[in-house]
Length: 99
Image 1 (cartoon, helix red, strand yellow):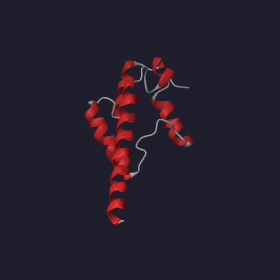
Image 2 (tube, rainbow, N blue to C red; image 1 turned 90 degrees about the vertical axis):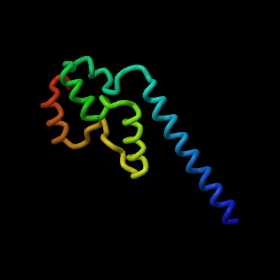
Image 3 (tube, rainbow, N blue to C red; image 1 turned 90 degrees about the horizontal axis):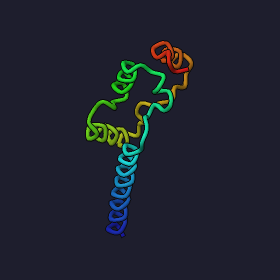
Image 4 (cartoon, helix red, strand yellow; image 1 turned 30 degrees about the horizontal axis):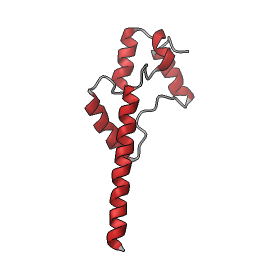
């Protein structure tokens, strides 16, 4: 019974790794910009700053390793949504093209 349980657990870990990896690379293949339609309102300098802040200026393999580290730790990483009002004001002051 223990052997069966360990084998099923190993299959579960492998399946989760495959799903997470496929999802990551499918998201990279999607057309468009992760900042959506607001990207056209930003200057190239501000867009580059955002790319650096979110790690999108790094090679894909580095982004993947960072992502997998966040998945293993259970953290969401940096979210593209801003929840509290102070962060929203700071973000809008730094990037005035985004309303």
